[in-house]
Amino acid sequence: MSTVQISLPDNELDFLQRYAQQQGMTVSDLIAGWARRLHARRQLHPQLAAITGILPANLDARDDYHRHVLDKHQ
Image (cartoon, rainbow, N blue to C red; front, side, top):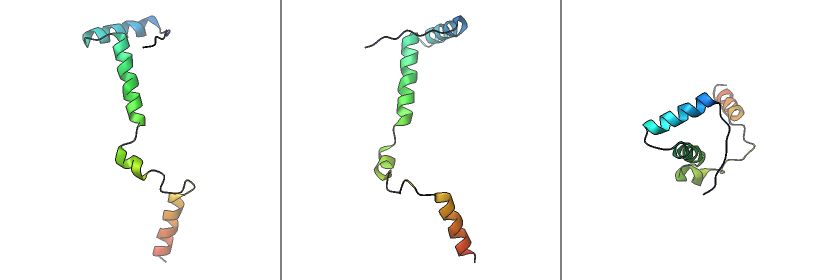
């Protein structure tokens, strides 16, 4: 496990220490949990990942949709 030193205003550190204590954890546990949640947000659901990339990167869906609507109603 690695360590890191961060600088925080005293009032922010006090808040984190109180909050962590109320939750029965350490400030390190609190920050590690926050990092895990951020990391989890970045991962795609496996079903979504399976279809990712099937559309061309240069697709302008909004423009294509507008063209479709114009063609449909002419």
